[in-house]
Length: 440
Image (tube, rainbow, N blue to C red; front, top):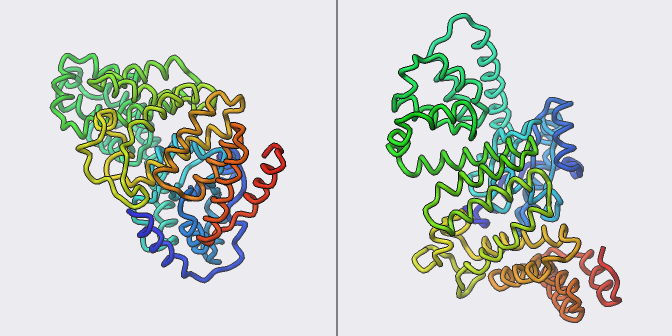
């Protein structure tokens, strides 16, 4: 969905009666929110604010200011906003594989994503219905947890009931590891080696190294069963396996396990560019989830250098869609990243911008300063948004190019003001630049 269409829908949502709900979204870290969600037995309502469409943010804020919604959210959710400048933004983006520029995500106290409404999907008829849908999903998860508890207490167990429970939990992205072990113990031994059983277990995307994973991969018929499934399905299964396995490695701070996951993931690609890509993706995700910016940046610097150099020149970058991948470099065609196909230049630009901003906040030794500067310049060439102009000014100032930094800071201030979003804090930064003072 285009940002314009998303904005129009939000404007309609914003026509609700408004009230004094400016303090609805709490200024707390994601880890603090998880603790509150556990203590209060609530879902986290995570508002992933747009870093490129302030009109979208403004109108969604208005929609949330409905007095009825305010009370409903206070009663059932821990509302948290991840702003464009939040320290948790990159972590959240990696953890939940967010590719859009904004969205609403409903998360439980164990960090499990219960329901989401990313920018690329229809938000629904209204926010009230969206909240109800999230609560409905949460209730379904509790119901399945209770069914699982009753199943293991029951003296009568059968394959059909167990399969139905596994499928239901898998559809809601809930853990199925213990159920799969039970399933493999329940069925006759000669059934474990059938194509049906292998494919059923594989479709649940068992965690790498788990009992279920090892059992089906040891089967002499695994390759036959696996390659009998359609390629798109196998790709989707592998993606789930990598994500689930990396999450467990991160929860246990098990770096060797993460590296083994990365090595396994590389085997699913048939070219060196793809192998390097997926190894980097897995390890970057691991280091983000374990909050290790130093090791994340050590990998990310080369990854985003390759990404930036692979973005094709786009005439009329601010408005032209890339709808044909024929002329894309092999590095992008073979990798098939989510941001390449049918992406507009602003998508490329903000992918680089978000990463560059992360480096600005975390590269305290300025080891990668010139790399970050180059990514921001590339983003600016693709899409001269005032946020990108501002970040470019900050990097120029860091590199000692004071006059250029002031010039770009002025452009950012003027552009944001013309578009109706003046930034008083940027004016204060510019004054510090003029005086040669530290910005932070």
